[in-house]
Image 1 (cartoon, helix red, strand yellow):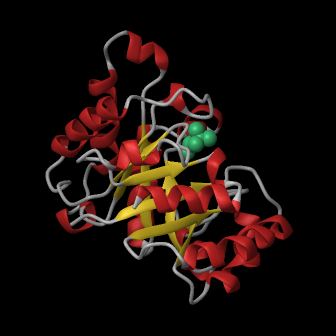
Image 2 (image 1 turned 90 degrees about the vertical axis):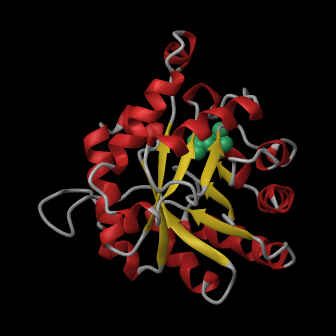
Length: 246
Ligand code: PGA
């Protein structure tokens, strides 16, 4: 059985001090949640150190929002998988649409980053999704399966089995306009079928997920949790969301 995963993507929000305040409020709420849900917090790099010690021994796993594909080298501003591991990071989001749009991430760099994360002992959360223009042109399935295949190209079956995928329609991110759950489910069924070995890989939905709508997603057969932006910034909202997801 696939796990239920709720991953909070804080994007460029919260200083170390603000992250600590979140965790202090969130951990008591999280410890009361059903054990079935895997909870992940993905703060900015600068807050990893501040909350790592607090999360040690708790049920909450640490994630990052990006990783470079090399272990080290002349890549100003970049952070590698071994550096993230040193901070107790378990998960890393790769290929988020904001990285693709504003930071030049491509299908190629997403593939390199995914392989580097796996080689470095991290679980990649590989994000794919279509723009509104592609959706209106009827190209959602072809685009999303292309991105999925590109990200996983060249991986061994053992590595494919260690990946988490996220389907995030770009038009639903931060807009309050969430995707119909049955449509998201249908897209994920295609994603699961487009690369061998994805049957047991968790696929998360992302895009305006809230405590009020998460259950409509996680009750769909292909949807194994949420990649959550705005609603993960407040401890009680994110705890409520994790509870409803399970
Ligand atoms: P949102 O963001 O929940 O604020 O729509 C989701 C994401 O970008 O991962």
